[in-house]
Image 1 (tube, rainbow over the protein chains, first blue to last red):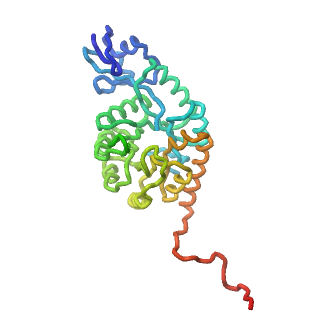
Image 2 (spheres, rainbow over the protein chains, first blue to last red):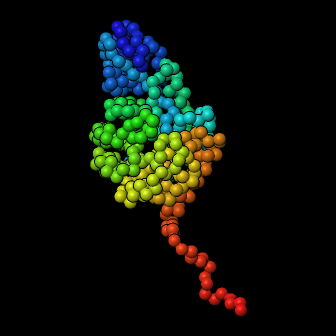
Image 3 (tube, rainbow over the protein chains, first blue to last red):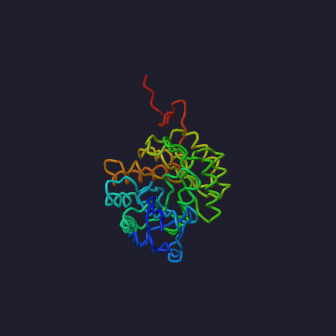
Length: 65
Length: 257
């Protein structure tokens, strides 16, 4: 399946968002995720189904003013 | 004591966490400033979660309230999604709402700001809007549910200090019961003291501390200046006069022939 992760084109066999994070090596609990502009909470990722061409954003905290 | 959305805050200095020479210097600046609120941002994770985890460890040691921002957002949509992500990640309803209107001046897009503030407050967020000192925009933000306003005093990172003291004074007078935090444009401790003397409730700083020759010492200098300005305001300051008035009594002075 063809998806976008943080702006990059990716191929995946994972069906759920939690699997996407594992497949692409995202670890830790200080991550937030959105799929097609909708925020997906950490406790919803295991059941959140991913579809062809989904646009996934994975963000983490950084320094800010 | 300053109260922001029901949280009592002792320190009137809010500190940004960007641009420090190192995490250790950031931590030292936070400690020296005695701040209780730091601002953070969200960006794409590029290190598989390690980037966020490292920063998480640092933030935990600081023991302060976290105020996430929507820095770099140029539209209502971007700001709303970023705010929702921040709420999910930081488990706080606080959001420093920035919707930038111009790439060069980084001034707030006040129309988009009001629209985004309404949406977020309706969702239960407690919005700290980065705005101007425009009174009508301020009224609209308050109507939207904002209980704190954060006007700039000069462009972000400009270090110029208050460009329009009369405008800031007018804003203070129009909104005596709304916590007003000057956000952006402060360069020196005296700039911070000056806006605090106007009766502003707090100052949010970043670049002026982070890019100082010694950020930790500058954080302390700002903390003292902000306290001094606040004390001066509370103590009631003398208004400027157009003529000289002797401070030493003239009655009873000796006369020499």
